[in-house]
Image (cartoon, rainbow, N blue to C red):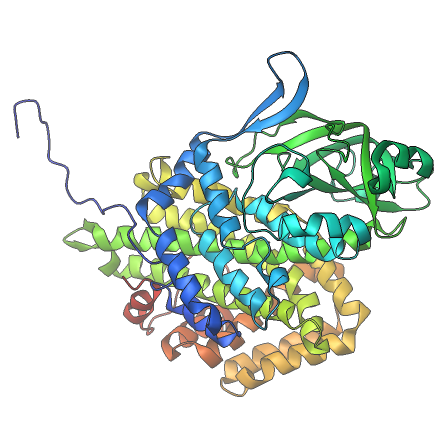
Length: 558
């Protein structure tokens, strides 16, 4: 020390990095193989190594500390409504698009493609989450656009491209395209039927005179969107009324930033949202001032069209939350292994072990559930898988996303003050959790969707769940009792108890997966803490007698 040094810095865990995010996660590797994506291992292994580099992990800090900026006018005063991003954002987007996170299952629909894509998305979720938003919306748009005739034929080659092209140009001049969404309005929010934005069909002759053959199906749109994500996208899918009284119902429209004649569409960005989290990504409020859009699907059938997109975005809310959980766990456990208190590492202190092991169980169960749900999407042509997916998608979005903030807070607390400050990633990760619960349907909406799915085809739903849970029920009497009670709950569903039902559905599927496929010490801890007793209270309430050392050794293999 020289005379100006007051102290030596020691007992600090090194930054988390130089790690292969796939290889350090046995639960993810096993789940990918189990659910049909073993063929993707080598590609995901290379991706996990790249994403675990310190310079890549640091892109998240840069992109969030230097958020997007609205540039409404150019230097000459022309309205341009451009969004400026930090270079770190563009690097993150190029990584995701280059890996096909926006398109792989559609571009190469082999068995297990949705599971493989979920694995990549979960790895990206451990790095940065704002960039996942436009990737998800682009991914979810493809099924609808495949049925959009000539419109889809023009746009899909650019959407399926693995080249990230952030330039503001007509789509014909671009190497790749991204799609956003705009559903909610000031007066409605969840109740999109209250939307007041209106669309009026343009006379065919006028549309052809302006846009040639590409004018077919064009409508004028006047109104607003309170949340319009992400405004830098090349086009958006929106909902609008198509008659004065609203009796025809909402219709879905495809609204590009640039029109076929090369002019800018009349989409006016009013401001960017000042959000709790997801700060790297631009969310906005916009007005349509005689904007032009193209009808997707039938008039009045906008909500069914959007709901198909919604099922895929909800899948990503589940997978994305599992990724954030995994990131928070890794940082907390890495810190606890590298920092000592009261004479030994934090990770060896009995009460801290209980907290960390409880977090590890929650993370592994979330990963297993997310990959199992992705298999439902892979095998949607199987009636059993389709029925299971209709139930588990909203249930999973409710329960996993609801567990997220508490998980993030506990992981942050493991690191103490070092977790609470913006120098590290935990504060950012904590802020990211709530958006997955709110976006694409809040918790109550998800639970009501569970009831709707059960009500539409109750026998098919119960049969699918029984097939999923029965093998594990034969392995553990406590789990068998839990499944029996769940079966009785399914016969007597009511709206007031919908949250409890959704929670039990997810825990049952997680328990079944872990009992059949996880090491016995993981399965026993999950059943003892989530099945044999109620979930509740803070993390760190695991009963005695469990092998916490084995759980923690498995949780992060470096």
